[in-house]
Structure formats: C-alpha cells, structure tokens
Amino acid sequence: MSANATALAYLTASVLFILALKGLSSPESARRGNLLGMLGMAVAVAATLLLPSVASYLPIVGMVVVGGAARAVVARRIPMTSMPELVAAMHSLVGLAAVLIAVAAFLNPAEYGIATAAGDIAVGSRVEMVIGALVGAITFTGSVVAFGKLKGTFGSVLVTVGKIEPGEQKTFEEVKPQIKREIAESRAKNKIGDLRDKIEDAKASGATLAEAAAKLALKSRAIEAVDRSGRAPNGNPVADLPRQPDVVNAAFNSDVGVDNEALQLPGGGYLYYDVTGVTPSRERPLDEVKDKVAQRWRDDEITKRLKSKADDMVARLKGGATLEQLAGEAGVQVQKAGDLHRGKAAGFVPENVVQAVFATPKGEIGSAQGKQETAHYVFRVTGVSNTKLDPKSDEAKAIAGSLKNAYADDLIGEYVTHLEKEFGVEINQSALNQIIGGEPGG
Image (cartoon, rainbow, N blue to C red):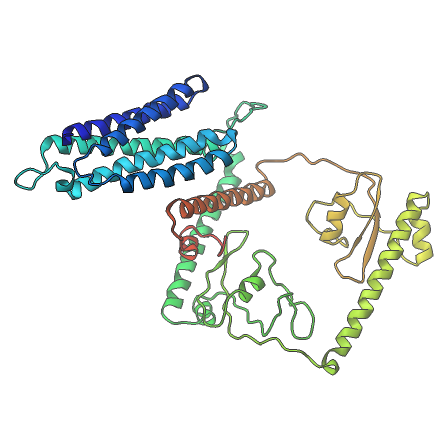
C-alpha cells in the first residue's frame, strides 16, 4: 500500500470520526454516528495493518487484546446514561492519535515512506500531514467540548427574568454623593495597591515587617504570644484579633522566617504578619494551671446552671408566665431592644444573641448564651419588620462585593483544579494569589 494511499485512508478515517461525533449529537442520528465511527476505525486499522513497515502482527494483536479487554470492562461497568460522554472521550483520543501520527511522520518521514531521494518530504505528503493534523485537532477539541457538555462541566444556564423596571435619568445632584464615594474608593484602592508594592519591595530588600511599617508610617502590632484558640499565656483572649481573615490559623500554618503572603481584608485592604518565634507545646504542672482550671470549672458550672435556669424560664413563659414575673423572681430587670439587624450587635444585645433572635419566629420564646460564657439571655420576639433592600445603599454594595469576590474565588478555584487535572500539573497557588490578590490557600 503506497504512502499516499495510506495518508488518504487516515484522512478518510478522521473525516468519518468527525461525522460520527456529529451524529452522536442527536438521538435520531446516534445510530448512524456509531456506524460511521466503527467504519472510520475499520479504515484506520486496515491502513495500519497494510503498512509495509509492519514486520509482525503479534504486537498489534497483543495490543488489540489488551485494549479490547479494557474496553469490555469499561463497557460493563459504565451506566447507560453515561455512554455518550464516554464515546466522546474515546473519540477525543482518536483525534489526538491523528495529530501525534502527523507529528511523528514529519519528524521521521523515512519510516513512513514519504521521504524523497534528497531526504525531504514531498509537497503532497506535507499537505496530507497538515490536513491530517488539522482534522485530528478539530476532532480532539470537538470531542473534549462534547464530553464537557454531556457531563455537565460546560453548558448553559437558564435565567428567568421576573420583572423589568424602566430606567430613569438622574440629575447630577442626585448622583453626586455616589460619584464622590466611587472616586474615593478608587483612589483608596490605588493607594492600597501602591502601599502593598512598597511593603513587598521593603521586604525584598531585607527589611522586617516592623521596619517596613515604620518606614511607611503604617500601624504595626506585636503580639507576644498566642495559642490556636486566640488566647494569651494568661488564658485571656487576645483583644482585637480579626476573625476574617483568620490570622491566628494562618500564623500556625507558617513558621519562623517564612515570607508570608498578605491576607486580604473584607474591606479591600491587606494584613501582613510574621512569625518571630514558636514556643513548643509542653505539659504544664498542676501548680501552674490549677487556678485557671478552678476558674474554668466554676465558669462551666455557672454556664450549666444558667442554661438550666434559662430552659426552665422558657418553659414557664410558654406555659403562660410573663417576663416581668420571672424577672422579679430572679432579681433581674426586663429590657427591651429594637431596631435589630441581622449579624450586628445592638446596644446590650451581643451579635450571637441577635442571630438567635432572627432564628426565632414572631411571638415565640428563645434563649441564647451571651458574649461571655457566664451570661445567658431569655427573650420573646414581639415584632418583625421586613426592610426593603436598597441596591444603592452601602450595605447592599458591601453584600454585592462579598458575593462577587466569593463567586470569583470559586470560579478561579474550579478552573485551577480543572487545569491541574487536565494537564497533570500543579499550579503555584502563592504566585497565583499574588497576581489576583486572593488569600493564601483560597
């Protein structure tokens, strides 16, 4: 079989594979697509077996047995609902094989019988290789896209528009405060970015974090020691430690001398930290901790009794007693709180109690632990007001910004995972975070 006939057979097989994929895109033409795919494979296999360079059929038969056995196992285990994407995935390998064959023929034309007497590749053979590689590449990429759509990795999202409100033309005076705020925010972001670059430059030149902060007139804070729970050596919580981001957890995942990435603050700023020392954990003697243990035991007992007392009061309130009556018996006062907002402390009501209030229906009784373990609140929800969301308010913009950042982080994370799985590589997360301004490990 001549080289030109072989190339033509491979080209024909590639076209049949493409037509097979097109047929598999619709249930009505799926049977025809399968037949075209089988015909293309038969043409490709026959062309290979008829090559003059095939000295023995034994290796080919062995590979056919191994591949057939593997495909038989897959065919038995794969559910029928997943057959279309399996077929698309297998066809992508066919297209990839066509590309690799064209590359191999270009690199070693003598082995494929397409070299001229001068050692070059004939023009006709070059055209055939280009066409074969192009068709194979289209087959591969088309099959990958088909596989992604069938599996659900790629696809469309249906959006239902519930209401369309007509636009309005606002005067300059109406939008003037918003424009000022947006300009100020833009300038602040630019300034924060410049400061971050200056801090990175200072750290790169060998300056410590404290020296860089002093040079740029920025506030720095040195914490002598803190444990994983955010407590100082005396057992008391370290004041003003940010919850978001969790700098304590980040510090315990670092070490002395490590150049740590800045943590991104919810408002758009950055928090830098360094670990200057690590105190190994140790078993402390009883004399050193007995006072703390006794105090913790007393606090736990008080908490248990307060919880039991609160549960009893809730039960009596549900039975018809009044808050004033129970408060008089307990020697405490009844206080009223209004204008509570979800997730925010209000006056004497701490944030966690506000959350419990919002989880309680109107007219119902509830209880919750206070900010300290030795405090407990019993409450009745007397009214609920549904505040209309103002999309232009600072709170709504903050929520939108948080959601936007969360969506962006999720999309980037999914895309990075997809790239790592697809190409078998590992992406440097720290370098990526530095480019996009994300949190370490995000």
